[in-house]
Image 1 (cartoon, one colour):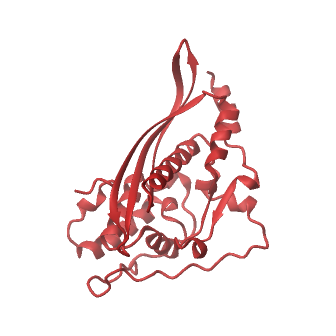
Image 2: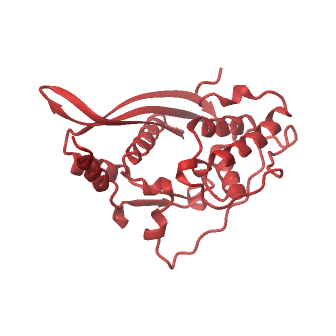
Image 3: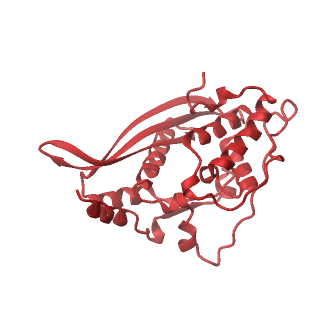
Length: 259
């Protein structure tokens, strides 16, 4: 396959999606504490099939699940999916790959089945976005073109207190200078930095949605859109709160690898 052919495939995969493909949720309705905007899973699959043809792509996944207890004392399941998305074609009974991407996704639910499904769809969307398919959801340009102008933006929800305020004070980022402009994609934080933020937040007793809102309030973007510099500032502030200035290297492990 030539370079020009690959460019045409990328352009087709990265084409904007119609309004009915956009999925939006409001934190005040779902109870998650933050709003989300993304592209429906089936629309991503449809685009891959339309551009590459049925059988022109495949995904390999590994899903790990562990039982957890939420900050409110409820039992739940936390699933993490490591996924490889391959683009290619079948030749003489073998799948010949011309491009692949790696991604991981996570989801927590009261149902193990829903946790597995959510982790897989999350990982597939991220892997497809690396080929341009649904990239608008991760570069923050979906709402520029699709949100109706008459819909007002909801004010950010206040950060809820940690589960045990008498034992551990809420983490603060007073020493961090807020930077509210979206981070350029070329300086996006690494997966290890994002994992560290989630891990330290769990140690401090925060549910993921509460920490999301705290990051957004401080930096003006969701954790996934922090720059590497912003992520380092957030990790430093949270680590200082979690370990009182002591070594926090144990918090930098991937979610699900605590031990």
